[in-house]
Amino acid sequence: MQERRLAEIPADQWNDVSVDITPRDGVLSYLQHSFPVQLYEPFTDGEGNLSSRPVHDEEGNPVVNREAVRRRDDMIERLAALPPVPGALDQIVQHFGTEMVAEVTGRSRRVVPKKADDGSIRFAVENRPASAALHETDAFQSDVKRILVFSEAGGTGRSYHADLGAVNQRRRVHYLLEAGWKADAAIQGFGRTNRTNQKQPPLFRPVSTDVKAQKRFISTIARRLDSLGAITRGQRQTGGQNMFRPEDNLESWYARDALRQLYVLLARGKIEGCSLARFEAATGLSLLDSDGGLKDELPGINVFLNRMLALTVAMQNLLFEAFEGLLTARIEQAQASGSYEVGLETLQAESFRIVGRAPIYTHPGTGAQTALLTIERKDRLTPLSLADALAQAETSGAKLLVNGKTGKAAIQRRARSVTDDDGAIFPRVRLVWPLTDSVIPAEMLVASQWEEADRPTFSAAWSAELDSLPSHETSTLHMVSGLLLPIWKLLPDESTRVYRLQSDDGERIIGRRVSPAWAARIANDDGPVRLSGEDAMAMLMSGESSLMLAQNQKLQRVRAMNDWRIELTGFNDLGVERLKSMGLISEIVSWKLKLYVPTGAVGVGVLEGLLDRFPIERVQARQAA
Image (cartoon, rainbow, N blue to C red):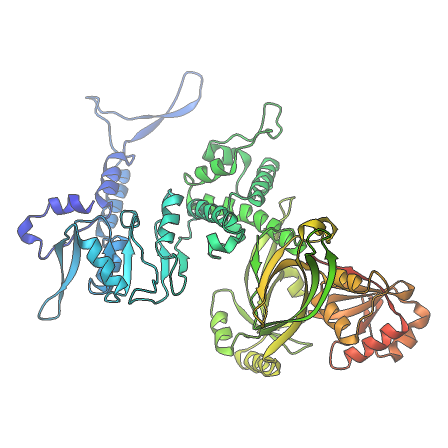
């Protein structure tokens, strides 16, 4: 487009040009010749059916509708008056200047800004020699130019990473713009800034618009990078660099299941705003067989995504909203159950200290051992500051909340709604606290003690919680490490996740993480479980296990009044007073008596007394490790 525009400008005017490379002429020409302006008149055929037909004059020439002509000319005038929008590459070069931007593309000419003596800016045509790419690469790697722009033509055979032998060893922030159809080319482009012998890896930033169908391109790249990570030491992050969320891969098994459910909802008429007939007419896809039931072979995910490109933006948003709601619900269910496969994960913390090592298997041939490791994990707490919290509250739809009972503060933000298998949509909100956030149903928030607060009240509550937080948090995890294959089937099947970490002593550990319940049973040789009050409290508050006590009683973590509490169930009504005298707290919830173990400073002592009176019979895992 640029070359065609420059060909229309005399060479002696290239020192001061104004080049419009937008598709303005194509759009306006289309409107001029394709906008319907012919006049139509109604008529009734011989069978009494009312219809319309074009009007012609006495000489057979078509008669135009003056109102249609006026509307066409008004639209052409409005579009012709719009200022030209430069291409992305020209915007970057013209904004930052050629002295800051190194361009490695296939362009032999470009329009660049020139500053006159009086300070004014004009645009001139600059010729670029064949060796420009080499010089621009050297300028970027030598830290002469801070910004590098390269295209597919400049993404082959060159390296732009933070090489230890280069002057510019800053961290690269790699923006993927206009990914296009070729996922392989995008992955190859990523590889230009992420190579061996680099001081630090790059930070990848894929750029996308809010047009839903563009996810078709991003999804393909996400799937290819996931595949790349699957064959690179089994580590997903190696390929994807954590750029994409699980729901960004629209070609996974979760997405295929969600798409089939979307077809079911369309056939049942459960998608509001899009009937089955409208969907089939807009996409050209057929979902029903001759008997009126769903076809056995429904259109695949790739076909569905490609057809989305032909729909209007409003229709794309409507269908993708339902599709993503189904997909998000499935992924969240898989993650909550621990069945979502993420490959080999590297655990990060301030400190890992091995406090226990118990051999559980010795190979008879080689003598190699399998050990149950108890690891003390120490994480530095990085709470959300008050300034950042107030900045988040400035976003659209955010509210400042304070709990009327606990006095804690939270930020209410928007969250994606989920869709169940019957097509019902459940609105949700996201609550942000100083250390974490959570997505809850909107109806649950209405029934809670959270109330909207003004800025001073919120700030006081948020600051008070920040002051009460410790600098670090200590927890315990259990891993089975060493020779795993011979006893793989003997390990708990609650989760097959494999983790790796490095202890403070420099020991590198790769193994399967197991639940505290399984570790406690193995450590006690399958006999009665013995836990201290502190260990039992930590195990319960983690939510990973529940304790089965004597006389069919059970201790487990529950959510009550928007706070985590430890509830005792299965108690006898005759022993309520004795349990209350031991320190348990009684409350009436929905006309039913509840007993809770305090979670504050006195909670450990109360729990120890309870366990002395009612010993632990079994530790039961509640979720995957």
